[in-house]
Amino acid sequence: MTREEQIIRQWVLSGRPVPPPNELKQRVVKAYGTAYALRTLIETGTYMGTMIWATKDHFGKIISVELGQQLYEQAKAAFSPYPHISLVHGDSGKDDIIRFHRK
Ligand SMILES: C[S@@+](CC[C@H](N)C(=O)[O-])C[C@H]1O[C@@H](n2cnc3c(N)ncnc32)[C@H](O)[C@@H]1O
Image (cartoon, helix red, strand yellow):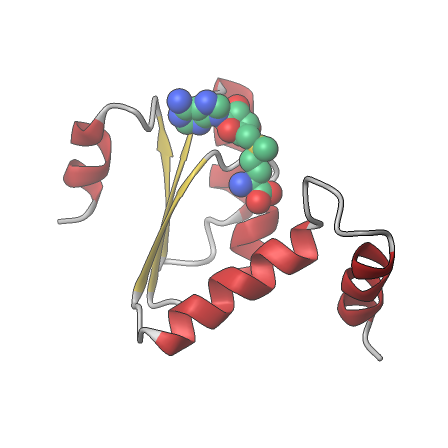
């Protein structure tokens, strides 16, 4: 059993408390990507880039929007080697940010 499977199993055995673990959220995102042949993942709230690290080999393009300046700069530096990953600094509630980066 992988570490991911252990964490999800422990969460199930604990009565599925909210919120679910990151490992489950990442598994669901990857499964939807595969099931619907999705090529692009758009994430609101980059934080430490955990979702991006987990899904970077599953999507042809990833756009992640982060409100916090420092968090954005950290992620921008961390993912600079990956041309298919775009970090956006701003409020994801403002749809012009996403539209601009989808071109
Ligand atoms: C729970 S964390 C995100 C975790 C991340 N998606 C992951 O899977 O590891 C929430 C993040 O959303 C950012 N945030 C909150 N409101 C936002 C907004 N309106 N636009 C963009 N980012 C926002 C916060 O600064 C924080 O870094």
